Picture 1 (cartoon, rainbow, N blue to C red):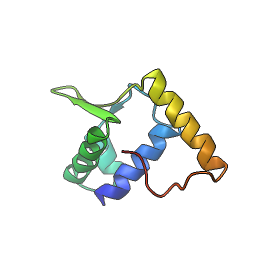
Picture 2 (picture 1 turned 45 degrees about the horizontal axis):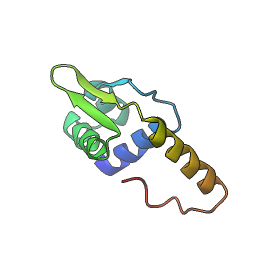
Picture 3 (picture 1 turned 45 degrees about the vertical axis):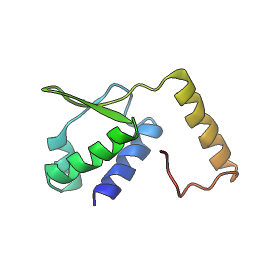
Picture 4 (picture 1 turned 120 degrees about the vertical axis):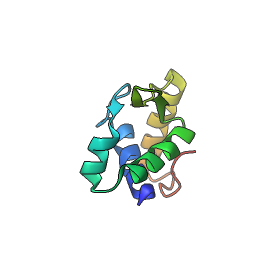
Length: 93
């Protein structure tokens, strides 16, 4: 289940439905996915290892702001995937 949460959050972030700098509430995500906070935390930790989100003590989880190079790479990947030049099964990282 954490893998599915991770994939869903990653898609929402890459597609711009969750903006860079947005705070991610463990409680709200747990309610939305109808799972425990532990499973949400595991998914967020996976995204943190991929530098997609970060955690700040006593503040919570936040979507990282990509550098210009990272943003360009995502756009290029999306364009190539849209043309069928790249398989989309592997994900980032």
